[in-house]
Amino acid sequence: MAVLRSEVKAFVVQALACFDTPSQVVAAVKTEFGIEITRQQCESHDPTKFAGQRLGKNWAELFHSARKRFREETTDIPIANRGSLIQALDEKLLVLQNELFVSEGGMATANNAEPLIGDLIGGKRVLNVGHDPAGATWTVQLRK
Image (cartoon, helix red, strand yellow):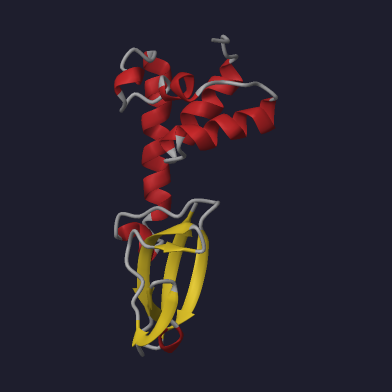
């Protein structure tokens, strides 16, 4: 396991504080710094996880201040108020309610469907579903 420079540790701690997954952080560290780290090494920089319980006091303080700032900045986003955080790689899908049908045996039926959290659409998982006041469309948050 490679020893990380302070700037890399700060990057990892702040990314985890913003609810990035260890896999996302590993990829970002490789892109940003050209360093390969493991998911386990990454998770050891999250003081809310068992692996990160021995994280230094300064790093834990950085984590908690970054998380607090992230939460405060996202409270203006309506979807964040419902406990779901929008990630950079999420996709937004706008669906007309009369264009989504129940599928049986791989074939669409005449019955209208409603996207549910946990469904798969185009190989991506549905994280959140909202609808417009008129009931004409759904707004769906998708993530790989």
